Length: 238
Image (tube, rainbow, N blue to C red; front, top):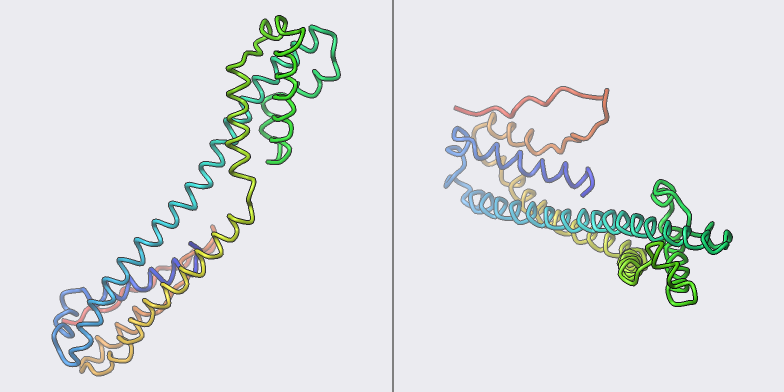
């Protein structure tokens, strides 16, 4: 969720907190106009539902990124281990050309871009499968090229490929989520607009001005060195 949505959600919460202060609640709850009380109830439920939706969607997006990081790390290490075994086997049989295709340090594997990582891992798998099934099988086994290690690397490559194969789908999903989020925020804003239209009917000007101050959307996101003093709390009418 971007800063604009975060600031709007914080604004909603600030307004509800202001209305919920004991000294303020007595000025509006079950007082004319009666619709104000109902709309505060509506706003409270809507903000709770909106916050829950934002949390769920953030967890999904964060989870997807975490899954990719995990699968990438697992493939890097699996390809590194199998690659070492392939390189050793190739050198043992005098094949420096193929050894060079598999002999990467772990750091080099970790620095590869997604597509490059997958292609090199698949090449290591291809070489390993050829060595383990051919006349050099005994040497391959002695060097650590086993069916289990090959299968494990194949699995890691497939898992990683599944996560990077459809980037446009991920982009579309994020775009759809943003559109849905905007609609939900606008629906909540409509409830607060209703409160805005009713607030001036209350006789306490101090309470009314405090409410209007609480409705301001403040940009609370700023970088180091740009800190600004926190805005004063809205007054409580006693």
